[in-house]
Length: 219
Image (cartoon, rainbow, N blue to C red):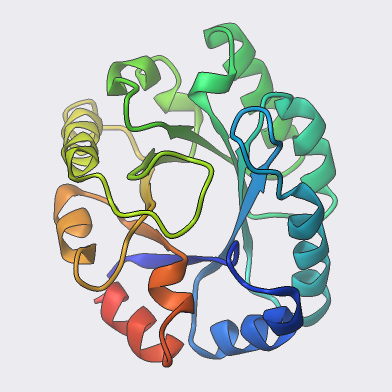
């Protein structure tokens, strides 16, 4: 059974409190927080995501899964550590080299938080090889980062399989998260490729029955 991290990126402010409650009842495993700075990606979501984190921490015990799509990673790590997330993920494309990545990994861990690294559809999996032993999760982007509601890039599913084969061959204990365009009709492909954490936004939020969708995705 996989875990579900529900993205609340597309939820309107007037529906957020109700949606948080309904997702908790529906047994989402995590709230996925899509933080965008308007520089690494076109959209800017930081202010609303901070606001939503505040709501979640005040009314829910479901852990936060923070995904930083930003250039100034350290700045945003410090912002979101205030909300005691379960994990903070940053992009391998946003760091200059392995040394910078390892410095950020060490900093996040020193604040009692798990660490993830995300990889874009066009980036080769081999770029992650040097850091896999130090992190808890890889997020394979199955759409181009920066916008909600996109269709899944099927070639990215092959990248999940490539990563799964590599970590199995090298006996690395790490989660694989898949993020972008995942709905009931394609979730089996993603799970079969090796993902054990599924990030879904509109695939859950746009449904009438969160609980049905989440339970079917998990199985």
